[in-house]
Length: 159
Ligand SMILES: Nc1ncnc2c1ncn2[C@@H]1O[C@H](COP(=O)(O)OP(=O)(O)O)[C@@H](O)[C@H]1O
Ligand SMILES: [Mg+2]
Image (cartoon, rainbow, N blue to C red; front, side):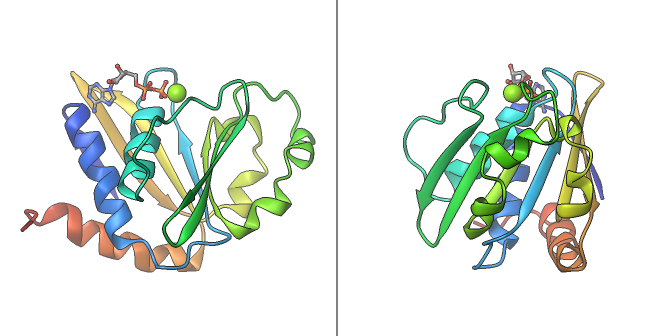
């Protein structure tokens, strides 16, 4: 599934649509946000965390590597791997312990092994004056999600 995102609002709307089709229980889910600097990874992540019910600031996890959020019905771990140099460092980040929540990972290219462990990869790119998003399902349970998202993001929103 691929979408053109002409402006920031379109990126944020897509994140909100993804939230609207997520299962109630997302413990153990991993979503990767791939794309070069400025592609819109943090924009998408912040819109998703806001849609999940977070009202306050959403600091970049660039230095802390992980920013946890306790939200209604789920824990979210906003993770930025830009500064890791070795996949082994995931262990020190407590990757395995984070399976009680929804892992949202920027710069997953730093740990190529994550492709096998993740559910969904969202690849953001520059396109014309805006961006594009390509959704790549990586697990069987993400297939249902992508079908729902495809329907939700092609239909005019009724709310
Ligand atoms: N669909 C879009 N069209 C145009 N600009 C966008 C879009 N999505 C995000 N941006 C802008 O691109 C810039 C970089 O976004 P950001 O989310 O910080 O990128 P990244 O985290 O991938 O480095 C921001 O100024 C943001 O407002
Ligand atoms: Mg960023």
